[in-house]
Image (cartoon, rainbow, N blue to C red; front, side):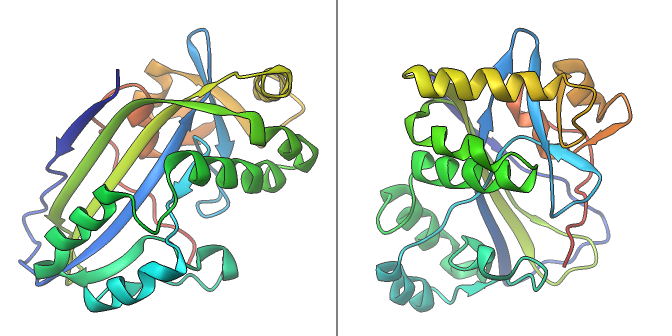
Length: 235
């Protein structure tokens, strides 16, 4: 059964209180093979690996509501249209409770299945295997846990930060999804493939699998705590 965990997040002593909060609400896909977990190379953090997944997107009917809350979406010029309608940005701290209430309602936004099917299709292309994307539509999900961080101060920034990570297991629902899982697992142990790797729980907590750097939020695949600091994304 899935669980909801609230994490206060790191609290740098040099951070100052702020009236703004940066939010980032994500879904992560856990693909497990015995004691190992499949990770993809991340285009936003070159050199690092993380589970497939990404930020939920909102739909056009939510635009007016989010504008009313004062939400300002975050844009990354290097990622172009992929970041449009992402639930990543800044809003007034006074609006955070209203934002959480709207998100919990599920209205006018992707659910986890929509988010993870879209992200998995996109990321299979990024790691060099677009043909596998045709099998994604049959993938099912099982909720593992939800971890909520913050809002907490961020050193050197004039905002607090609040993040949510929904972790879901990949569930095989038919022949196509079984073949997809088998193909991805095979890629993760293929020494000729550098964009897909696998790591044990101990390696994830350590932050490296061999020479591969593991993004800190990957720790939520195996528990409710992480020890590493965030890796800055490409702007």
